[in-house]
Length: 378
Image (tube, rainbow, N blue to C red; front, side):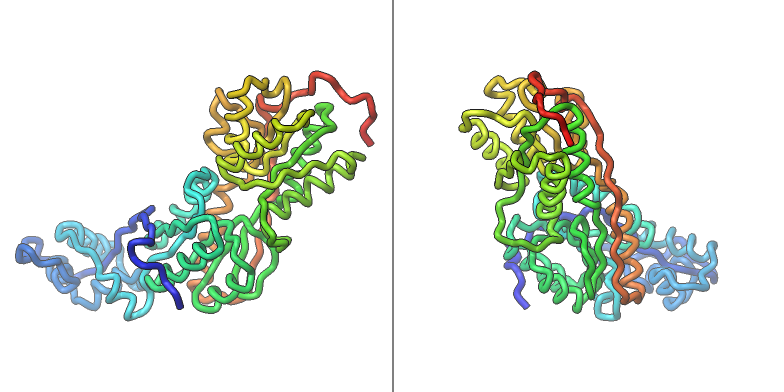
């Protein structure tokens, strides 16, 4: 199994969860620990007045620990600045760490998902480590293998683009939950939003305002796996356009769902003789890149062109941007994913697939076109 050289691994600790321990006998609050030596579990037990076995039960969160004992051991751990040896714990079993794969730290959607992930794992005494991959299949696979090498107890993979066979391979090694990429699986769980419905909400909104010429930004990729978010959103866009009798107006622009991808798409559109009157940008991060170029060349949004994003990111909520966008319930996606992973770590093996319903948040980047089409909408 390959792993990235340490210089290439990009890790940041998102939440550090303190470990715990237990007690009952006579505490020795002034029991010293020699300077320059790391406190051990034996030191904690001695200070709290309990056996090492009892202190270990607190550390492991085992049953049969009284509140008073737990409190005494925790106080001893704090006083001694005790930190459990993760490597030693890993050799005995669980490491109480989980990994989260992120491939684009510029995309605020991932921060929103993490806001739901972190409290669940903190409540279960798990530390969360973030593995940042480049936006490529090869980098994603290498980062997942690196996290496995670090003996994580389980993984949350955010919108991975690697083939499903690779996901199943990793799920055969340790518990895995995939976020924002739906579909049934054999060895792992999925938590996603119905992207087909999300795209339809955008098209229905724009058509209701009077738009007929509606473009859609999608990801330029040869992978036709229908579970990938960009495939699901493109299908939803095309189906909604057909439903409104606008099949001849389907206009898909292939780029990337990044800030740079949004700016590149804007420049492609500006080369056209006629601009669409509205754009479904596929993702907020691409919408923001698109808007920056449109604003820079003096195009009025939404007067000349309406723009809708997807993710309802915090920056899009700011008054100067006020981006119409689909809300996936990112925080809930993270919460559900963390809960499922804890169940997997606890022994559940049957796969589960959770699909949430998105909502559309309308703001000031969408409005009626200046000149409405005379043809009626079906």
